[in-house]
Image (cartoon, rainbow, N blue to C red; front, side):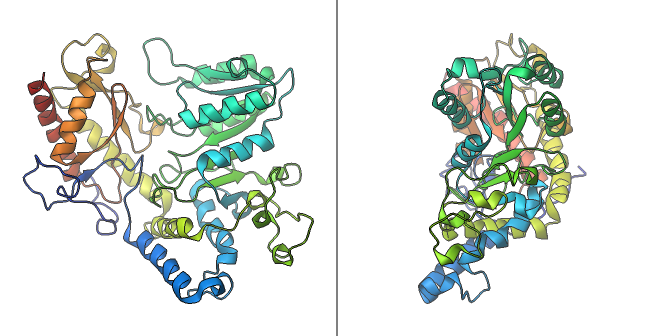
Length: 440
């Protein structure tokens, strides 16, 4: 099989089967098969190194590390150091991004700045089954501005019998209802199905109707190439603990197009958003950074940001996001071929009526419409088969990601996943069905 070897095979700490209590796997000292980087990336050696370096600076230099850092990474300008690398990942200018906060808090910040509804234009258009945290944020902003979420949050569902959205349906709703839509805000990649939305085309269509456009890039940043500046996206938010492998709770990111620099000042000002030239004068009047970094509020959280530095350096050294993506397309395609060759695979059109144990794939088959993820729907739907298979696979040493009621997500990662890993994964999947049926 003509699939390239992992691009950073010895750069990550992958737990052994013993570490994860995969008691059914006879090779307890072998690395487990980790296909859950779409939820939490594993620890890289470089991320660990950058974290430990900052811990040591804290130990040896204490407050001096803010300005006189032995590794030339002063904490007072940590954000400025990261911005150019982070901008490359999302296709932005350095001044358009800030490494700060967490995904949902950043989403609230951006909605506070951009969601200014009127009686005529008040809706937020999103996909049905958007990530729950996004749904909560949309509802809370609608309430805060005097609207009922059921009226203000317009959720777009797939067609009857389908699992993913059609581009033409999204564009049709924007065309027909655009005069009532204040913000179009989809996920770059839908977390449940793995569908990659056409960001550039949706953005252009929404702008043509006078809507503002934001994106939740939690599953897209570090997964697919992005060009937020050139696509004229108004704002975006993302996390760094999935495909960027920066660790649980690592510092997130936000983007604001430079066209808004003069008209979207921070509404919740904090001293770290003050222009660095005057920040430490401790003046009584806020002097904001121009651009995205003006939204910063508090001192940079160095210990949750240091792994981000290592993660971004690793991506850069691996050839950047486009090289990563080229490997990813091949690797995800291999997993798809192996899965569809399984006797347990059921073509999607036949899945709803399938009465025997099996699985289908609800992620789009076109590589241009997905990232490094395949979502498997377990059959019969509602039978509880997914839970049994998931537990059996974990006991065999395969870590995926379960989503109730019937989906397991697998995310092969070109950094550390090999073709052999995927072959074993599918073999263990078939074995797991047998184990699950034994429990019936």
